[in-house]
Image (cartoon, rainbow over all chains, first blue to last red; front, side):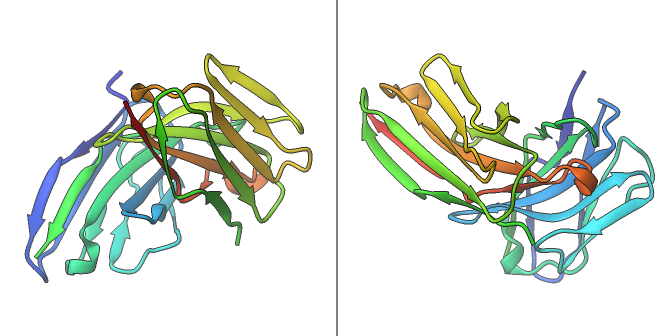
Length: 113
Length: 113
């Protein structure tokens, strides 16, 4: 099992550019989520999904879009990048029942200039 | 919405000293989880506490869940340089949360040799 994979590892964008951060998991987890991590701010939830076709907003959704067409993939789209979106982005997945622990991907370090 | 506060934000210790981080939820939790993130890495699940008053140990790490299931602590005895990193607590409300966790801000631990 590869677990949770994310691409790219690093990305530099100019203000106004768009891009998609990829996330995939091979554990058949229903729950997937995107977090951003900024110094002193911990992990802030951007968007999450509890299954294919179902997404919802987290704590900081503005400027980001998601979709979930398959159980395995949960891409995060930046529509028009802003310097405030410079951050490290983590994707995570888990089961939706019982006492689910989250499995994190290795992260994408994004810089917007 | 549910909030999870974690203190302290930073802790610097000499190798061999003890370390404790505290977590407090605004609502009663189904369970609480602890994660460790090494510098430059991603959060990795350490443990989960489910029962009121539960205490679990992992070698030098002791985890406690409060009687009211709203607070928790992680205590490390005799820190080592390998303990360096950020420790996060994450509250799980259960029910219709379907895997969604609320993370504390994390405590960054530095261990001086």
